[in-house]
Image (tube, helix red, strand yellow):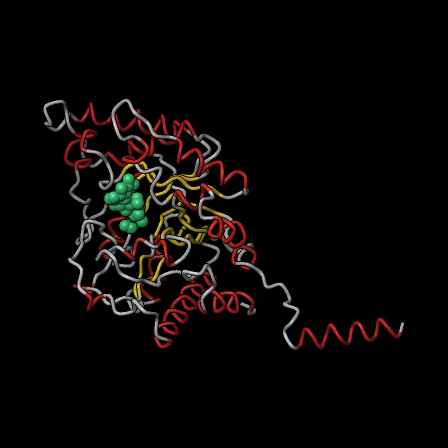
Length: 374
Ligand code: G3I
C-alpha cells in the first residue's frame, strides 16, 4: 500500500511537471462529432516515400484528397492512354487507413490536355465529340474507383471571378452551359453511391456566391443531387472576413447541400496585386520583396496566423451542422503550392505543420478551441 502511495504521488508530481502528457486528441479526434478533417496528398506522401508525412496524416486526419494525380492531365494524358498507378496508390493508402477518400477533379479548365478539345488538325471538336470524351473519361475514372472513392469534385472553378457568370472556358464554348449538368449525370451513372460536389474558390464574394447558387439550383432543377458545395478556402490573413465566410456557409446550406472547406490554407506572404483567389494561371516574376520570411516567420505573424485559424475553426464548429469536411491543401509548409504561387521559389507558412513536421501554435489553438464547451 505504502509503495502505491509513493507511486501515485510520483505520477501526479510528474504530470503536474508535464512529464506525463495527458494524450491530447488529434485533429480528427477533436472534431469526430463535427466534421471530417483531412489534407491533400502528393505522390511522396501517399506512396510512403515521405514516411514522416504519412505518419502525420494517419495520426491526424480521417479524409484525404489527391493534390494532382486524379486531374485529367496526369491520369489521362493521351486519348487512349490512362496513367492509373499513382491514383491506385492514393486510393489504396486511403483504404488501408480507413479514410474518407475524395476524388479531385473530373471537369476543370486547368490541367486538361489540349487534345481533349481538339481534332487531329487542332481545330475545336464538336459538342457531341467533347461530350463523348467527357463521358468516356468520367465513366472510366469514376468507374475504376466505384465504391472506393466516396466523393468527387465533379466540376471545379466553372464560375468567373467577376460578375458570377459561367467562366469562359473551352467546356463552355464547345458544349454550352449544360456541360456541368452532363458531368454530374455521367458521374452519377458511373457510381450512383458516390457523393457529387461543385468546387470553387473565392466563394465568399457575393457575385461568385450568387453564380454558384444559380448553377446548383439549375442542377437541382434537373433532378441532379449535389451533395455539397466545396469552398476551397485559399485565404489570406485578413481577406476574407469571418462574416463573409459565414454568409456563404448559411446561403449555400439553404440549398439543402453540405458546405465543405476543401483546400484550406492561409497565405501569410505579401502579394503583388493584393492577390485573392487561386487562379493558378495568375503568376508573377520572382521578387525578393515578396519573399520576406525566407529565414523564418516572425512571432507577430505567427500569432496572426494562429488567431486566424482559431477564428475559422470557431466558425466551422458554430456551423458544424452544415459542414461535412475540412481539408487542408497540403500537409506541411514544405509541400504547399503557395511556395511556388503566385511567385515561384518563396518560403510560405500556410498550414498547421512546419517543415520539421511539427505542429505550429495554430494547431494547438484549434485543439484548445475544440476542447472548450460550445
Ligand atoms: O508532374 C509534373 C512533373 O513531371 C514536371 O517535371 C513538373 C515540372 O513542371 O510539373 C509537374 O506537374 C506539376 C504538378 O503541380 C505536380 O507537381 C504542374 O507543373 C503544376 O502546375 C501542378 O500545380 C498544381 C496546380 O493545382 C495545377 O493546377 C498544384 O500542385 C496544386 O496544388 C494546385 O491545386 C489547385 C486545385 O487543384 C484547384 N484549386 C486551386 C489549387 C491551387 O492552385
